[in-house]
Image (cartoon, rainbow, N blue to C red; front, side, top):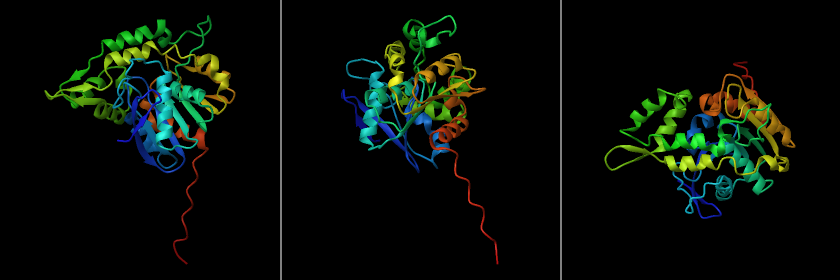
Length: 296
């Protein structure tokens, strides 16, 4: 697998997922990994050359040596992949923490991305009486961090893990192909024949704890590339009210709401989100040429 080296020395695993067209960099949510995008990429391969990566402490990218899970580190991971893969003016598609990483990467290096499609970035306004703070804003990410620290890490096998996750929320809402990709590539084999999550619970928890300390909210006006803020109409995290606030602060921001989807939207219905992202970033798909004459 190809690797990139971030500016702080973290070695970042990334994946050329193929396809034809301009480059598209995909960034995953906390607790996941780059290859969970495969079902969505299958819908995009005719329009983009797709790349994904494992953020630090996730998948095959190790935790940072200094133990710092500040989210600007995720941005450094994204920029390292842009450089290592030679991506010129790529598009970006991110989910949750991954969407935030792409926004932070654009802030750190303006002009990196041609345009961004961000599904529920973790960029929250100050709490007000009108907009309820998202779950992740509970003193900083402590609820999610506590849940991560209780997460089961070891299973008898990958099939056992798949059965476990598919039977109860939150991961039971994932499309079966997405859940399969998550399990197949998100576990490592242990000597006793069991499997263990590559994203260790402590690393996930520390990521959540740093989720509201990156300062992106006050800097959204500095992001000048076209940016779509997408969200699920059923989301209890960063839903339509917050997304509208985010988009309004972006100079070239717009909002897209997916009725019937929640915070895991890109992983719930990859085909629907892929089609919307491609349409937004590139315009409508070209119509197929009509068949030629069948004879004289």
